[in-house]
Image (cartoon, rainbow, N blue to C red; front, top):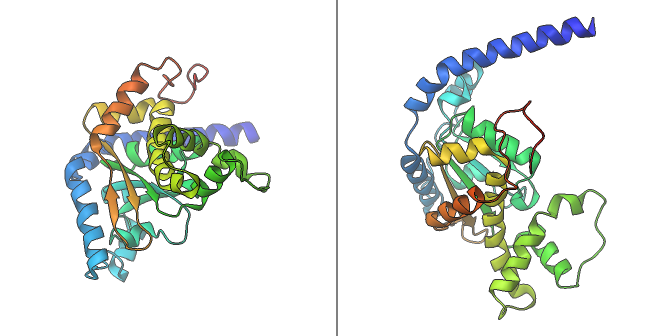
Length: 265
């Protein structure tokens, strides 16, 4: 019985995926360009900061659409940000239902689960842009910075594996800014953690690399200021530099699809 159920389930998944792929090109063609999607995010944040938010796509009509339509026909951005309650991602971009495919995790780290969620947002929801969004006063980066500097404290058992991706970012920040001491390292660590998330994504995800290289998707870093509501956008050219470095790294993952050879990363 279990074998029959699994076979039927696999068959249904294959049929659903085939139907999805048949419509994917049409969906992608109807989306804004990566540059236009970034402009939409910037405009939305400006409305939010200025107190002129429109709260579009949050009414009952849009809710009804959610019950009958595919998010892939609407979402224009994938955003990975922190779980911090001070960073309500849809609100800071003045976005509504089906506008943004959101991934939230403490420290906006990109590990296996997050990379897979991003791949889904880019390859299946067909969003033309990915934002890796850090924020000021990040508790995860602060905790790791304190630990690296010898002022750490005991953490619950599942937290260290969650934030271990942040340690290399903090170490890079300390090396790049030897003049910064103590808590002054934290803002530099927050920015480096955004770059680290982008690097980890490119190392783990061949499909994301290909979407960026083809021009179908742009990846951009940003830092949200929790005290002003302003999203500060980081240089796009840095993303290109990270991608170029990853492409020469022999440890990068090469199998884009599940079921291939053993992963290299």
